[in-house]
Length: 246
Ligand SMILES: C[S@@+](CC[C@H](N)C(=O)[O-])C[C@H]1O[C@@H](n2cnc3c(N)ncnc32)[C@H](O)[C@@H]1O
Image (tube, rainbow, N blue to C red; front, side, top):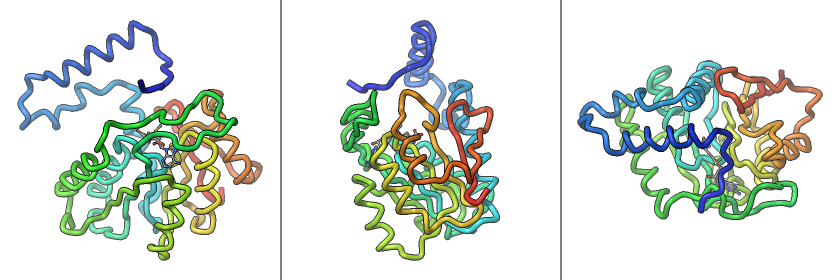
C-alpha cells in the first residue's frame, strides 16, 4: 500500500479517480491522445509543468546538466527533455540525469517523522519502462541519435559519488531535490556543492513542509540559509528554489 498523504477532500479524490479512469478508457484514438493530454490535467499538475518551464528558461544561458534527485515516475525528466528540444535543441551537453532507488525510501531517519521505508516505491520493472519511454520521447527532438538522459538506479548516497567519478566533468545547472527524506538529501547537498556555479538552481519540493521535515533539516545543515534567498514560483504551490550565489 503506497503511503502518500493527500491534502484534498474525499469528493475531490473521487473526482480525480473518475478523470483518471476516463483517461485510461478514453475513446480518443491513440493518434490524438497525447496531443490532448491537457484535457486531463488539473491546476496542481499544470502548475508543476509551468514550474519546469520557468526553471528551464532561467538556465538556458548557463552551462551544466539537469539532475533530479528522486525522479520516481520520471515526469520531470521528460518535461526537461522536451523543454531542451524546444529551447536548445542542439545543446548535447545539457544531459538530464534522474537518480532514484525505484524502490521508494531506503533510509528513513528519526527526523523524517511521517515517512517509512518503501514509501513512494514504483511498480516492479518501472525503471525499464521509464528508460523505454524517455528513449522514445527523445526521438521527437533534434539530435535524437545522441542519448542525452541517464537513469541512475540505487541509493543516491552511493550512486552519486560513483556517477561523479565516472563523469568528473559534471557541472550542475539545475539540481532538483525531491528525495523527501533527510539522509540522502543531506548527502547529495554535501557532494554537489563544489560543482555549482553562480546561477545554478537548486529546487526543493518539501522545504518548510511540516510533513517532510527531514528535507528542511538537511538544507539548514548544508546551506547557509542567511546567505541565500528561498524563492517560490506561485503557480506551483509547495515547491521552492534557490539560485546559487543569490
Ligand atoms: C516524491 S518522490 C519523487 C517524485 C518526482 N520527483 C515527481 O515529481 O514526480 C520521492 C522519490 O525519492 C526517491 N528516493 C528517496 N530516497 C532515495 C535514495 N536514498 N536514493 C535514491 N532515491 C531515493 C524515492 O524512491 C521516490 O521515488
